[in-house]
Length: 110
Length: 235
Image (cartoon, rainbow over all chains, first blue to last red):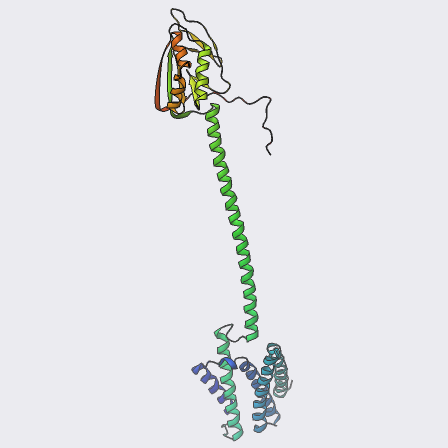
């Protein structure tokens, strides 16, 4: 419940401040957001499974974001940045989908 | 159910806030411009592509420009050729006697009431005018050309003056020559000692020679199409 409030607060803050992303961070922000979405879906699944651990959530959230950003950074250095960020998005998308499927099974028993 | 402010809940809330903030920022950033978010590589690639396209279009442009100037050139040349041909046709029309002509010249009238002037003397006068550079000549109402001839006509009687046959047409005295050319040269040529006017005077006729600042010859003769001759190819 309070997590949902936090999400709303973040969205509202983003809408109000309209921060501009620094140029050197532009390739990483979308990947970081997708990685965070993956961590969030994982946390939601764990919550429904009754296995939610705040420490795991925090660590997985931060490590997901950092690893995803690092992979993209590495790709940029190697000259395959756009391909590698596509790969990261695909992998994270698959994970989000499988988490969503688990949540769905838990919620609707189907 | 009341929200429980446990440490786990607060941490999750903070991370969710960060996520929401990041997501909104990214959406906002993404909607700003198609290129604001693009990677350097992609931008370079796009720029390369655009440069290539620009080069291509520039090349096409210069090609079309060259084509255009070529066409303009040939149009100009065609116009110049047309003009030259028209000019030549006019000149040749005057020389061939098919076009009216105007310019300075002389008017020579030979009064011959007694019929003493011969066709040969009149022809001599024509030759003299030609030699002096007359460009258009009439005798009576007949335009004189390169193929003109003068033959003896009937002799004078009490009621009719003498006449000569010019190109098949009878021309009666007095004989009027109109000639376009340099008036001074023409009159000097006619007046040379032993020349045509002296002969005419000796024969007993009188004449009147005047220089004209502007003379218009309207008599023309039809252009005969050559029967046997055709233009030879030039090399």
